[in-house]
Amino acid sequence: MGKTADLTAVQKAIIDTLKQEGKTQKEISERKGCSQSAVSRHLSGKSVGRKMCGRKHCTTRRGDRTLRKIVEKGRFQTLGDLRQQWTESGVETSRATVHRRVQEMGYRCRIPQVKPLLNQKQRQKRMTWATEKQHWTVAQWSKVLFSDESKFCMSFGNQGARVWRKTGEKEMPKCLKSSVKYPQSVMVWGAMSAAGVGPLCFIKGRVNAASYQEILEHFMLPSAEKLYGDEDFIFQHDLAPAHSAKTTGKWFTDHGITVLNWPANSPDLNPIENLWDIVKRKLRDARPNTLHEFKAAIEASWASIRPQQCHRLIASMPRRIEAVISAKGFPTKY
Image 1 (cartoon, rainbow, N blue to C red):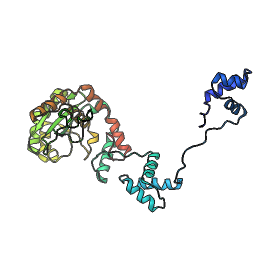
Image 2 (image 1 turned 135 degrees about the horizontal axis):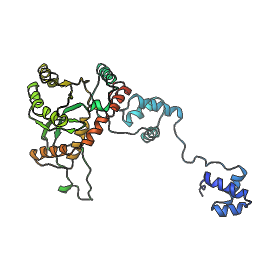
Image 3 (image 1 turned 60 degrees about the horizontal axis):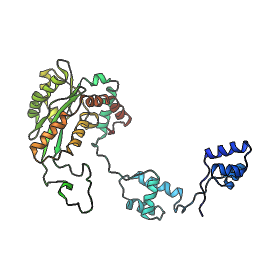
Image 4 (image 1 turned 180 degrees about the horizontal axis):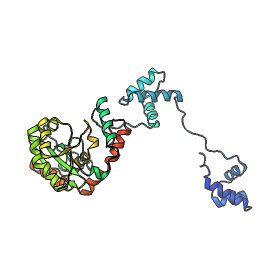
């Protein structure tokens, strides 16, 4: 027969109180619904916690510390790799034991996040940039018109919601997710500020300096007019070749527009990246059949973005700056 559960702190306190009131052990056990022996052990000071039960660990603490070092040495190793190295260190165990130990240490096997590769020079420039902008207020960031290009594919690969289906419905058309060998895609340019979003531009072909300046003329300026009116603003874009071309720099000079200096490979600092994610998540439920329907769905999703969402993203800029400084220039969670 198994052991009964230990008395809780509340039960022990009540037993002490009843004993002080002059109750007998039998009366206390009947009142609390526990055994008389449990009451007796508590009052005599012989009550102890339950001993650990179950099978003992087949590995030692020293061996577990060795496994932790092996895991820390290479986070992308398979269970087989971990077991082999642990065996080579003198600990012979099964694959299941390795799995249990790494889980007990708090490790879980997850799909890694994909972040841009940053070399030391780029990390240093991110640190310098973040330090310079560390004391910018949300009001100052609200004066920045953020921009970016993003690619949208009609086939979303493994992304998207799961499907609810019964046994035998695996091949049912309404339970299938369509895929094509060469999925159609569109490249889109957009801009946003704390006041909302500007008009989208669907880009045809590759973007060079000349085509980018056309985008600036016909889409960036209307975006600035819509979001800032006659007020001054600062324009942001990344360091793509078309953006950093000399003729593009001259275009900004001729139009009297200030451009925000920007560190390379830093999408985590651009709040418009979050808007692209919002739009792409909405498109998972759209299920367009033609490219025309796909573009219409993108425009509808973009137009549904509320100014409050944009303001919250702009308000996150001070936190993004602090995150870069804390990470010493490495990619952040944003």
